[in-house]
Image 1 (cartoon, helix red, strand yellow):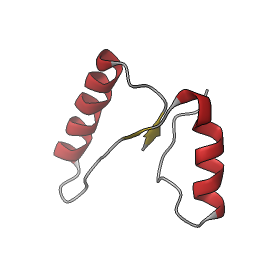
Image 2 (cartoon, rainbow, N blue to C red):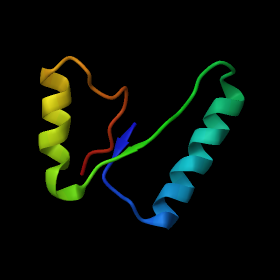
Image 3 (cartoon, rainbow, N blue to C red):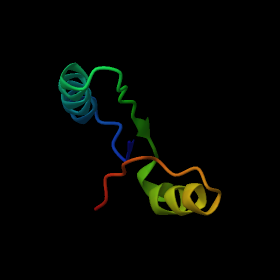
Length: 60
C-alpha cells in the first residue's frame, strides 16, 4: 500500500491495521511504501504507467 505520510503516529496506525489484516488473512503480507507528499501523485502515476502499481494507495 502506498501512503504519503511519514508521520510516526500515522505509520503506527497503518502498521496496526496491517498486522490485524495479516492475522485474519494467513499468507497475506501487508507492507507500506511511504512516499513524499510533494511527488506522491507523480510517483503513483509513474508506477501505474510502468506496470508496477501498488495493490492499494491512500488518496487525498
